[in-house]
Length: 177
Length: 462
Image 1 (cartoon, rainbow over the protein chains, first blue to last red):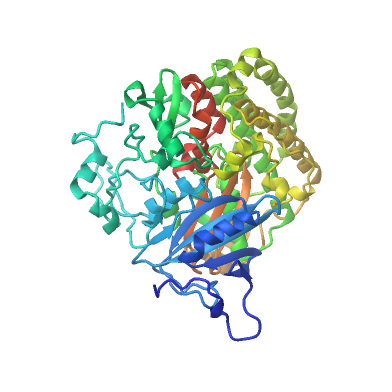
Image 2 (tube, chains in turn yellow, orange; image 1 turned 90 degrees about the vertical axis):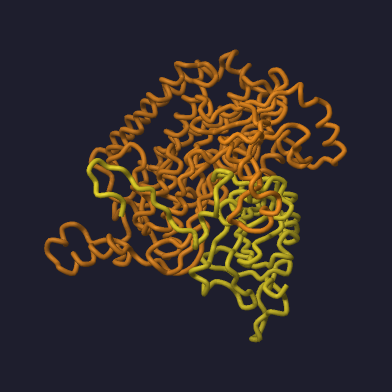
């Protein structure tokens, strides 16, 4: 899969020492927050390894659709931007440390492995991401819509999903714009 | 009433959609949603993994164990009923599907989304100044926390430093809001368990706090008071006396609660040992706040990862032992006392000074200068029409709301509107603990357990 260039060690920049790595994932830091960049393939293994390291709770799974903002900064060299990003927040209670994982997910094949086996609490959050972005989670036990009605078409938080308007009826008003 | 009815009635949307597209649509495209119902399916029609989850097992069992579990009771001995979405004890529009054998809950599944209004999508259309009006409506019982976490995230991207007085005002309002939110919990929790007078007492004490909010912000709820860059206005004259009056009025009320509920045998009978969850389960499910602390894990962001000025304040983190409904009740009751301690310290330590950052990028000029200076008028106009631009980047900020970790993931593309705003609502995640706490209990206990999770549906559905 060519579009799945996540964090690979050979992608280190030429100048001097390479980027900081944690379990093979590139680490960046901004606003005092550490971010790990990983591809889809190493994603579940990375979360499992981090869990063994003491990052024992997965607090949040969400996603961003970068359709209209593809040239974002913040990605280290070697991580090719894709349309979607799945963003996972982990926390280590013992060390009092937060970690964020950003996974690049291509728009034409939005599938990532589910974290359900590692952190059962991601179940509802992954359903929400599926519902809102149409990103499918491989291995999720019950990947159904959670917030929208089950016969809803489309995924509302995608950037190509228009903001709909329901005309509000006022007495004597000239009709919807 | 039952969910097992998948006949081709024109009213059942799920059945119609799946009949039209079949299984192929599931893999093919995102426009077709044929993944079927969100409801609790009948025994035998449900996959082993889902069965396990609905039966409330976090830790893995083998498939054979699950099959044995599923076969212990045959499907015609059980009944699947809806509790909600319009049930007074579900605190809004939570729909819970329960599989019952007699009075006992075997499996359960929360079905949510009835209050979904697309607030995260709306946030992408609003400027950063308008954004606070949107997020404050999510967790409507603790609106200051929503505003706070959104403002902190925006400020982290802007990299502006907030004046000390603004920070202390934020601490004051947060802690008062924690108290009013917990009073609302005590009121509804008492009501759910039949202590109807508690409903009146809880609302009565909460009213004191809401009156104070009204004096400070102009509104009783949805204040839009904590904004990126500080707070909207300085505290009004006489605020200190008002807070002292509240602090004097509350301790006798809390004593009353102890008599009415904490030490009362019926109350203890209804809550102790009901809806037990272990620390491992709570952590695996991502539960935070009083649910996690009731299992004995002393995790409170105010202490563990301090924000604002919590590292300078003296207070205790209240933890439980058994992880049951009583512990969650007692934690919230005692957190009111801790919040009162914090508020007293704020009264002593709040410094004079500015209530918002004097950064031309973020702050509009004061009202007086608009009459004198054309530039100030233009500046004011620009900030309120276009909004201020926030540097590109992404940030996750969390605060300890009355319900747990309230997080805000904010992505900016450098424009005046958030590119993506995600709120990690503690209630949304905490709801997942319900199947685990309900299993094996009675329907009457289900009411107590739902109440003890204290879900606010505005935040769950957003």
